[in-house]
Each structure stands twice: as structure tokens, then as C-alpha cells.
Length: 249
Image (cartoon, rainbow, N blue to C red; front, side):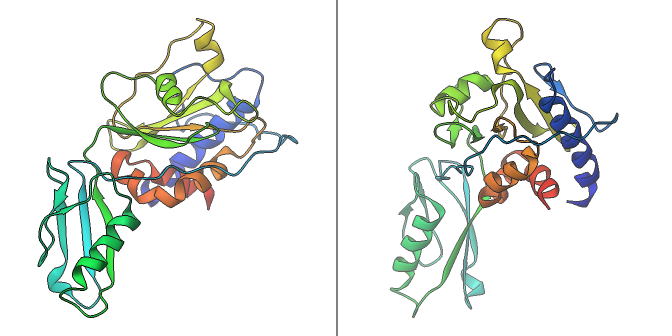
């Protein structure tokens, strides 16, 4: 986390200032860590608690499995095309479409046939679906599978659109892994796009779209609250968890 924290923190400060002012950042503009930013003034606008999407395993994802005091049974299982994995000692088990907790409960029950009081821990070892994550002030925060070329506003529509009361449409953020491996933060003005004054942004697998609340001066902290429950997942998918976690500390 240390190698990108300083640069990311400056990038976030620039974004906050750009979106809090009267001239939002231009669509698709990458905000680099260069240049100074004036502090954004807080407003009285309230913001609801960010909603986090529920991650569900899909074909191609890799499931990490560990069992307390059973190191020989530790494994990493790729979900096959039929939606199953085959952990040590067990027969094929269907896990596609299940949450981490659901897979963990299922394996605890299955391993109870061989072990006394098994304690199974399940994690997302890697993500191989073409998914993006929509967080913040949308009606239904979620992970969306890209079935073809998709733009940022199309993905937000898949999340049932902006929250009408709280969403700051003029400063939507898209976070992705840059060519050098470091995270990039891009800013979109949805109002300008709808008015035909700017262009929408094509998405890449692993992108995170974050819609801040209107008047939210410290969007990075709210974003950190929204992302932290799935930080490891998003970090694997797009290498962007460091942005929110560094800025939220």
C-alpha cells in the first residue's frame, strides 16, 4: 500500500476540490498527482450510509479454502464451467452464484462428514469474470458483469440508476488500474454527458464506479466505507483498494 498512498492521496485531494467547485472536472480526465488543490468546503447536505454490493462467485473465479488446524486440506479451487469445485476429500460441489458466507457454510457441512467441528475459511483468490463494481449513491450498488462494450452510465443504469435525492451526477468517479499498475482516478460529469456536451467512458474489467453524495467534501472517506467490506475483492479485480483505504485512514 505504501508505494501508491502518497500519490493517491494527492489525486483524491485534487478530485475533491474539482468536484466541490463550480467547474466540475471534464469527462474522462485523469487527475494526476501534480498541481495544487484548495480545500473543499463542507456543506450541510446529508448523505446516506453507502450500500455495498453482495459478491457472488462466477465461473472462472478462484476460491481459496483453509480449514483450521488442517493445513493439508488448504487449497485453491477454480470454478469450472459447470459451476463446481472439488475441495480435498469432497466430491464436486456447486458454488456458482453463492456468496462467500454461503460457500463457507456449505463446506462446513460437507466437511463435518470427515472432521469434527470443521472451521472453514473461504476467500476470493482471484476474479476472472468481466465485472465492474458500482458503489455509492445509486439505487442498487452491485457488481455488474460486462457482456459486451459497456460505458460508465450504462453500468449505472444496470444498478437501477442514480439515487435521486443524494447522487452528485456532476462528479462520478471511475477508478481503474493504470498501465504502470498504479490506480488511476477519472472524473465524469453525467449531466454534461446527458446534455450531449461530453462523452461517456468505456469501462474495463475490474473498474470501480463510485457516485458521491451531493455536498460530500470528503468523498474518499465515504468511498472507503462503501468499499472496505469488499476491499480484497476489488483489489484483486482492479488493483484499486489502496485508493480508498489509504485515503480513509
